[in-house]
Length: 490
Image 1 (spheres, rainbow, N blue to C red):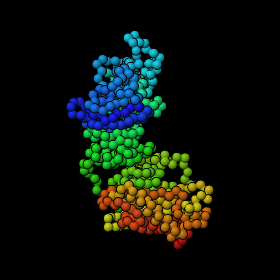
Image 2 (tube, helix red, strand yellow):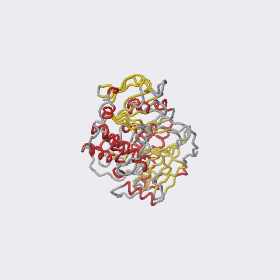
Image 3 (tube, rainbow, N blue to C red):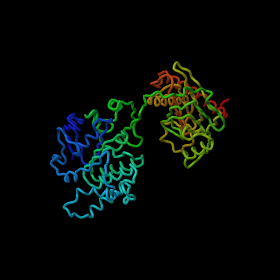
Image 4 (cartoon, rainbow, N blue to C red):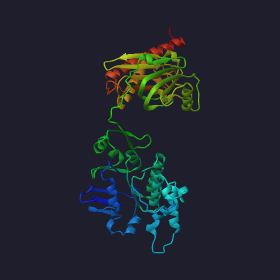
């Protein structure tokens, strides 16, 4: 659709864009990234003919772009520049209608049904129909931006060049606009080349990315091939961390500040736990980085308060998450700052241990009941409905863990729990085999992210040894307390 070959050019004798080559297919969205001054906008201006090229070629549909007349080029390429200058105060409808100019012919050309349909659709797609009779000067910067995007869409050119189309837009309108552009690329085969400042937006909405550095291509490819920590840090001179988008197979970045932020220095101790018949609560002196399978605030996050709530054995609720959130609010806990679990075990029987290592301490808290024990290897043969979980395990680390160590800690803790069930000869009542857990066990690993860096938490690492020993010890003691409460042992 569009070929750029060895393009060099800029504003004067000293080129800003240097030897840039790429190809964009029909229906593809290509995002151009790079720091300020890297040549992103200059490249768009050279492709659109606003700035001259020193050398190289631009081919559209197999023909050199310079061979098209001005109107022919406008029927092929629509351009949304970064800054808009309007000498006259037109209405929104008049401004958008200017996008149909390339399709007019002759001095007395008439307004066609096709023109009307294109303008109406562009107004609808950009959600500005209600402003159609408003003077553009009376609109906010974000509203004006949407008007000019509508003008470009009304042009109905197969190639759309955009220079920071989300300028001045709030996040809702950014999403709506980019959803619209993406849909046009998919549904109508529109070819889009767009400059972005926001790396995360570019990664989400673009098929490929072109990363520029000092006028040259530093990297080009799929988002996952371009949004790499080393590449972004090298080009932008900024510390970043990449992670996957929660819903899309696209990378996202988080900026890591270089400035030293004052941290509240704290450690978690046995005294930070409170136990009652209602719940077990840990109030930490600062936020802990947490990974859990909790009911409330599961997954990865930062939290200060942790609650293991006792519920009746026959607890039943249509929406457990909503009920749990309501309960926490009634009890005076911050929903945003609290991780919440449930257990049918009497919370007074929680076993809490503090285990010391050379690097610091690990605290373990376990509530354990074995009335609904399950052998996971035989689970396919079971048809009994699951009941509320009974073995909840907390692992609290006074140390700094990378993400992979959190996962390793969960594996180590699970292995230790399973060993404790074997030691206590806990059996699945339906199969008669040694149980590996209960039907809805929950696990939490949290770390202060202060003190010694602990890169691994496997079973033979310093941290893993403490976790394995502590979880085994507390689980065995918790099971025995459960058996005593049931009168199974003295």
